[in-house]
Image 1: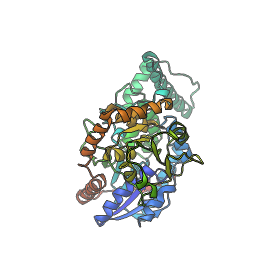
Image 2 (image 1 turned 30 degrees about the horizontal axis):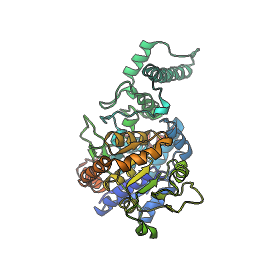
Image 3 (image 1 turned 45 degrees about the horizontal axis):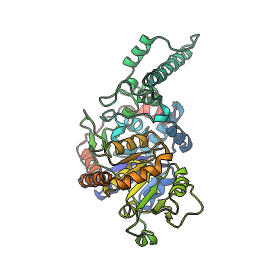
Image 4 (image 1 turned 90 degrees about the vertical axis):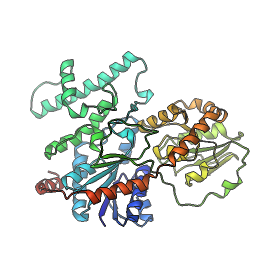
Length: 462
């Protein structure tokens, strides 16, 4: 039996629930599993009988705001140092044999300093090896090609200028300004690991700058602690073993390293009884399921009530305690939470935010989707849904009613979703992830650690 410390992002239901499903698999394999994180959703592992320790998070308001702006500079230097110090102190007390994380970005640095093996749960689109290029949401990038190229170059040049100016200030050199030297910019990009795209990421992607900006505080900390490696943000949050909570049929990759493993979707749903009204629905009427997850755009609720109230549709809505209308038309059936698959089996389509778990849950039931994304990750998931003919990507809510009519009238969406449901039957994400970690622990060699002074210094924040 090994001791495993699980560090999810406790304010995000998707990240807590994925880690929880893997943790249950590890417990079934007789490992001791301990969780650590603050956040509203940490009640879930507690309810499952896991020990949960406190651990500070990035301010969820700051993180949420930056996500919605399409930014990846979620951490600053002080936050990286503070989180690493807290994680090292925790690891010193718990003495884990392995650290497992889902979207706690400093966990890999702390595990490396503590000489503890590190496992990371990621989406395929959060790696340098995804063969479908991530795209910046349309409203953030000019549509004209020349303007789009200028937009990308401007982000890179302004970012490079900030780096040079920061260095000049540190060396007490006079003069700051813009970076006009293109050769200098190209040299910086060539020589800086943050700017090196992986085989799946094109060099002209606007994401290159966001990934490098987001990684900068981590790389500065790594250099200060004399840790090798670094790179862009995707490099920062990979593990000694990386578990991809996707299937290649949805998110393909290329040149994937041997320590990266597809495990399949990892989805969760609450253990609650179905609403009493679920069996009262009329099978002859089209049924729409509306959910925005735990962090989606609650304004969608008002919109769908306005568009579909007192229409021929039966509308099921789960609000996840997000703000929602005070009253509903007679054709609306509303609850805070429900087991998603119970609802989906009664539904003809789902309107959602494009979250990873929601998409896979819908497809496992053969239900086509209309996705209304609110940030970059959901945006790219939504585009994949449309590209694979599994539903419709909506960025203009004025087109929502037309999208519903199209899904319900065009049988190929349902047919494609059913075909994908057959594919997903071949995957058991939580069981596969737990088995891979178990095998990794069984085969891993003891780590020789000689950086006790670095650990103490990091704990003290030096």
